Image 1 (cartoon, helix red, strand yellow):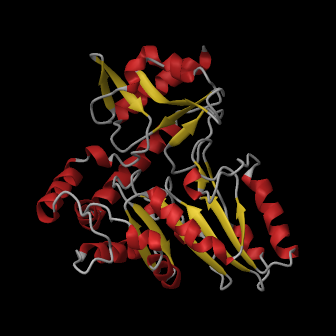
Image 2 (tube, one colour; image 1 turned 90 degrees about the vertical axis):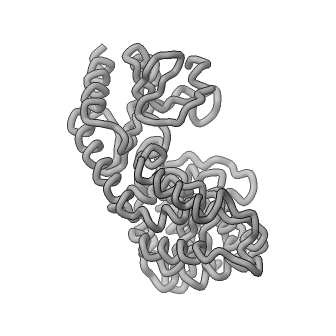
Length: 351
């Protein structure tokens, strides 16, 4: 990949001007196009004028901005949870939660868990999720241990697959489980924009907790934890939460006021997904409603480059691996741009 693509000095959007050349950009994680949404930017600017640029005090300081409690109540209500906790990053939200809850029982990691979920350096688990869930169900039901902590992503966003946690309904009632799910790529997108919390099992012996970066679809430099009030209040008593500064209040002001912006952007994204998926052949992998499209072709990015199209392309699972090439749609793309992309993809497949 060209070196100039590594030192871009302008905001990401649907079009990137690099070296005087305009490229259509189909990569990144700004699924709802929030970083370039004029109304969102206007609200954010309004929030800066109201609350300032940042807040370097902890959430236990004797003088507090009330917007943090307000934003947590809004987040819990919006994503259908009992309670919520907001931190300055998704990584912090994940580490806070995993460290705070892992002492409950025996810890099991699902395949390909994001490093933010790791307690220590983990040996990567590459087996299919479908295989892991069968093994895990049998292990828990047949073990002497009563208490368990399961840690997983909500989906594999590289080779798009949304995970189904329905198998946990078969866990014996005498077993107690805390399920921690990283929904960084799903929140604001999947399940009508509600994310994964609404789709997790509802059983008395299973406590479900969502952790998520708000920096992807939601466009905020912040992290989110969703769960029961009991667990959220437990996490708020940890030293990590007590000692950490919160995110900028201006972003949370925009999050509260901008629900209609998210909804309009989600509707636009679904239109874009439907348009592209209707033009692709069966060899593409994608999940309905999720804006990432994978083709098992390590040369795809280089073939699209002469057409002035940039897609997501990097080696995986390590630096010496073949390139993983994915097309990522956003709400900021237009139908003509998607039509052009589709025609170029068709030419790449036939060549």
